[in-house]
Image (cartoon, rainbow, N blue to C red; front, side):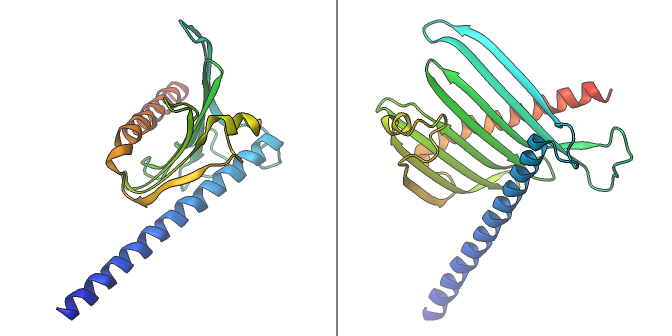
Length: 211
C-alpha cells in the first residue's frame, strides 16, 4: 500500500513537471513572437516592412453604436526555406484582436504551434453582470487544454488606471490549475472557436495571395 502511494505521488510530480515545462515552452514562444513584432514595428533591418495580414471591420450596431474590430494575423516561414524565395510557404503563428462594444474595449491573443494547433489563448473581457473585468489564459498541448489561469477585478479599477486593455490593474487570481473547470468551459469554447475562425481567415487570405 505504501509503495502504491509513493508511486502515485511520483506520478503526480512527474505530471506537474511536464505541465510546467510545456507552459515555459509556450511562454518562450510567446516572448519570441512579441519581440519579433516589436522589431517589425520599429522597422529594423531584419523587418524593413511589416509582414502580417490585417482585417479591419467597421459597423454600427443597434443599441451599442459604432463598432470597430482590428485583426492582425502574423505568420512565419516554414522550416527549410531561405530568404531568397519570394513566396515561401508560411504558417499562422500569432493573432491579435482588438474590438469594442459601446465604450468597452476587448482584446484577445492567439498563439499557434508549428502544426497550426492553438497553444495559448489570452483574453481580456471588461464586462459581466457584476461589473467585473476578466482575464483568461488557456494553455494547450496538441490542441488539448492542460492549464487555465483566470483573474478578475472591478471594471472601475480599469478606468481608474486609464488603461485601454486593463493591464496593470488590480486583477486578482481566482483560478490557476489543470484543464478547464466546468464554470469556464463555455468561455473557453467560445475563444477556441474564435481561434479556429482566425486560422481559417489566415488560410483564406494566404491561399488568395498564393493561388
